[in-house]
Length: 173
Image (cartoon, rainbow, N blue to C red; front, side, top):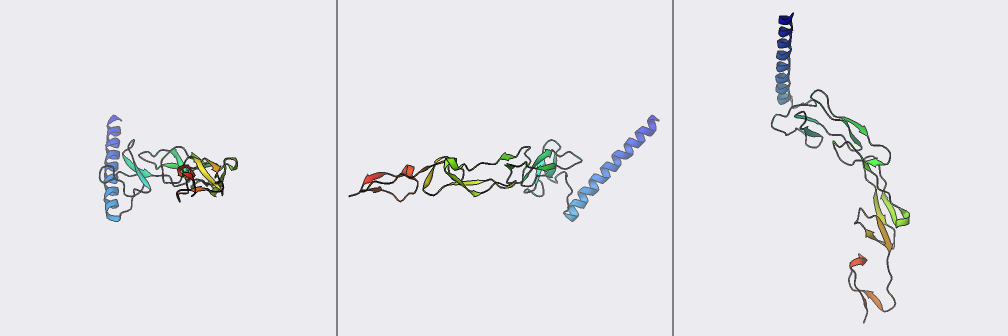
């Protein structure tokens, strides 16, 4: 029975060796890669946009598409498992991160309004309401706005720059 076990183990290892080399040959001939796969050279995957090299298993695996996050990392026998971001969260790019990002809120009491609402694959974009400018953060990530100050009669702005923080007020002559 020990001899039979050794023969069976040898046969399985030969089958795995042959199937691995057959798949490598087939990949090179057809250009079709099934994920996960061992890259032909180093850590370079065929599609850098939708695949990544997983150092844990030394294989190329699928990235999760925008709007989804990694639920289970790939293994030597199965590809990455992804799941959708929860409501109020997003990921805008292909990724292998285990967490989605919280959608920013455009708070009206901070003088903000939505340019673009958040979806599972797009970040919300806020802007200052008309007559206001950003005082905390920078566009497009402004977090708070304030109202413009208006010049008194006989005063004005010495520059055409529309960012009031950098404007110099002076008496007009």
